[in-house]
Length: 221
Image (spheres, rainbow, N blue to C red):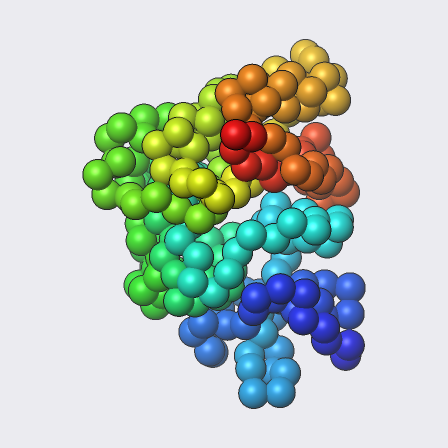
């Protein structure tokens, strides 16, 4: 087994990625656990996590540090959130999820991870939770709906500071199934730029997620 550190609490394990388990012995989604030196690693499945897919596909800008404060939009059941929780072990991850069903699953994950802060809220309405969330270092958005770019931009306005980085996962088919994904991607990138965000990197997520792209961005002024 060849193991190399590739980021804060993130390792490459042969051709896979893994994070240092914040809760040794506890799995979140039946992921494989590995022992490495004095650490326990959780293999990070790129077919269950778009961030893992982006890393495997060559993501070079990785803004997460051990003490990062993160706003996660679209937390779902907590798969990717749990790995960010491993990485930002001394930070805080404000985790917004609209579905009560998904939030119940998320609470099972967060009960063992004090840095995960669940918010049962609508990510399209940041004004409803702005009093609960501080300015953050990273805004991560994975909300598969028509206005996924717009809600990301709106949350960036509320919660970003000077050096905040944003990661937006775009699912083209959730925006318009009749338009080629490449055209959708260009349109959504243009929206980001029109609203004062500079795209620093873009990564397609194939073959792990079809018709998806990740945009990494920051304020352009």
